[in-house]
Every structure is written in C-alpha cells, then in structure tokens.
Amino acid sequence: MVQKKICLMGSFSVGKTSLIKRFVNSLFDDKYHTTVGVKIDKKEMSIAGTDLTFVIWDLAGEDDFASFRPVYLRGVSAYIIVIDGTRPHSLDIALKIHHKSQVITGGVPVVFALNKYDLVDQWMLKNDSLEVLQCFNSPIIKTSAKTGEGVDDIFYQLGLQLLPSDSM
Image: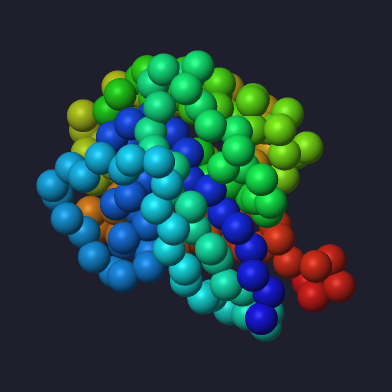
C-alpha cells in the first residue's frame, strides 16, 4: 500500500470540506462548516493496479493570502486547488496559492477542481478567465460536491500522476 499526503487548498467557502466528505464518506451536507487550521481524513483507492492511501489534509480557506500556512505543505505528494465557479475572486486566490505552493514544494502534481458545477447557470467564471489554468498543464475538472460529479475523478487524476512510472 502506497500512502500519499494530499492537501486541498483554496479560498474560504469554495467547497473543500464538502468535496472531501463526498469522496471519503459519499455524503453531502449543505450547511457551511468553517475549517479551522487543518482536518485530516484517509481514503484508499486502487489506480492501475496500485493501491493508494490518500491522507487528505483539508486546509482552512484563505482570502487573506498573507495568512497562508506553508508548514502544512511539508511532505505533501500532491495537492488540489479548489475554485468556486460562482465566485471569480476564488480564481485569483487559487492562482496565488498555486504559485506559492509550487515554489515551496518544488513542483509536485496538482489538479484544479472547478467546484459547484451543479450551479453552472450561476457561474461568474467564464471560459476566457479560466484559460489561465491551461498553461499549468494540470488536469482541470468540473466538480460538484452536491451531486458527486467529478469528485472521484479529481483524486483519480491525482493518483495517476503519483504512480511510479513502472506501474503504468
């Protein structure tokens, strides 16, 4: 069993905790629960014949980028940046977090989760503003913690990037 530390990061209220609850427990709760500091969960997944255990760190959301806690990234194997399609400011925060995280981690794999896809008719992020994500050559997945759409896929795509090259 291969164990990997994964961090979920993004602005406050983008749905990080809800995505984790959906992935780990197949549950959705529409009540907002603020994460204070970090919350850790585990989930096993088999990818291309390799059993992975994701140790998932749910980091408190930040809109004040100065309070970003790089210490949580120690030993991280990969991370997921969550962006709320209904809040354009969450993309700006995501880009800042991604840049700082790449410097700190030395460029570990990343997946971008465009969350709240069940509210796509209310999205304020348009395709032209999302084009900036394509330059990172990382998976960009539309997700909904409410419906479950794309949730397993963000972890599967991350897992593919974490597999040893001889297992592919």
